[in-house]
Image (cartoon, rainbow, N blue to C red; front, side, top):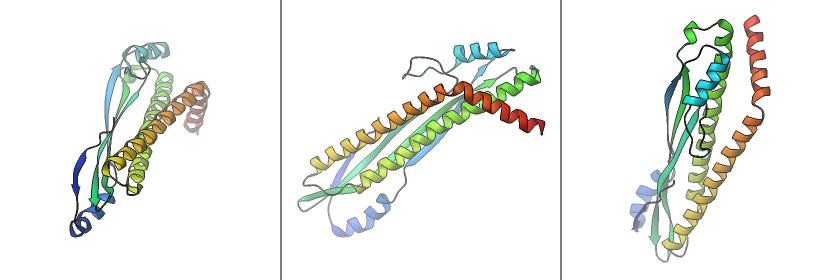
Length: 206
């Protein structure tokens, strides 16, 4: 959820010249962290069952997944009132992403073929989750740009409504893009894994 904090309405040209340029030019505050869950198993079928049993549960689907990316948007907006107009004094968007990935505890005791399959699969899981984080970063930057680009309005109440509308639209677009990405990835999973296995096998052969 994006939180808007109305900072006190400021006035005074000298104060504005000192403060607004530094705030307005700021980039979103973006952080990313990782955690891991362990799985066992000694066969490909075991790995599949372990991922289904121990993978992170997502609120969006209600199911467990091989990996997950938790995304939290936040931030605040300041408003500046001068005369009969109100404008954006500064906007700071924050984004926290937390990626959860699997670790296979039996990798060292597995056959070379199974390790090869696992390394290919786990790399694809990480790539998938990193892309979710990248989509979120792109929308955080877009949101901050659009908020800073909002023109002045007749009142800070009216401008605050425009901020809320802009925030809602950008975050809804974010959610739709994340959903489209998951749908495409799910539809292409088998073909993608086959290509990856063949590619890695050819590199190994060379």
